[in-house]
Image 1: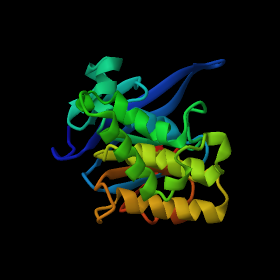
Image 2 (image 1 turned 180 degrees about the vertical axis):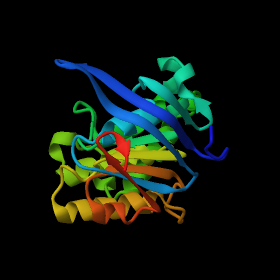
Image 3 (image 1 turned 90 degrees about the horizontal axis):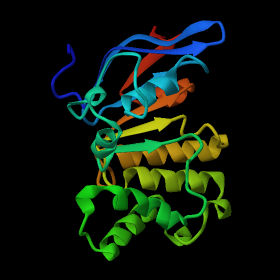
Image 4 (image 1 turned 60 degrees about the vertical axis):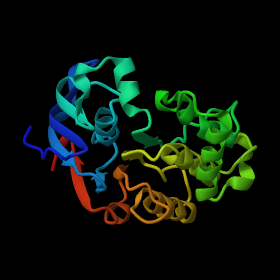
Length: 235
């Protein structure tokens, strides 16, 4: 790869092609990029430009049609699904536009989940795991909502729970897909402020790199670097 060896995320020649009713459809074409530790990068583009597809490939949630992705130094194309999940555990956080909270779990239980799924925490007392999850909820200002289920929370509160879940294991890289897309403007601004604070290098931050998909230029400008995606290629 041409990317620097200390990049936390590297992509080389990424392509994504799907079969459409009129034949093959190219979603992404020849994407090459690198993200450094602690760097915040915005992927900016119109709806349908391939932003979310690219984010999923970088996070190892999907496989490219061609090209290579290295996440935390590992070529994720050479790993099976269990291997990719093990790589992401404790090292990768993901904030979805649609929150993706489990409706049958409380806010606290949703935040506990990634800790319980991380093999590195095998043997850790349940009280210690719960304490870490409560701390993450407190960081997003929802300690008082720990026992509430998602349906009992506002959209902004649900997204804050999703952020707590994403940062609870202090990941090395945080992926966020249109994290304010389902929120009103004022709530969205507060969510973004929170996301940058928690991913930053301050006392409350994780020091994580952040890759953020958005169609909002004002949000993109807050990142260290902006990548423009248009019709599946870097513009």
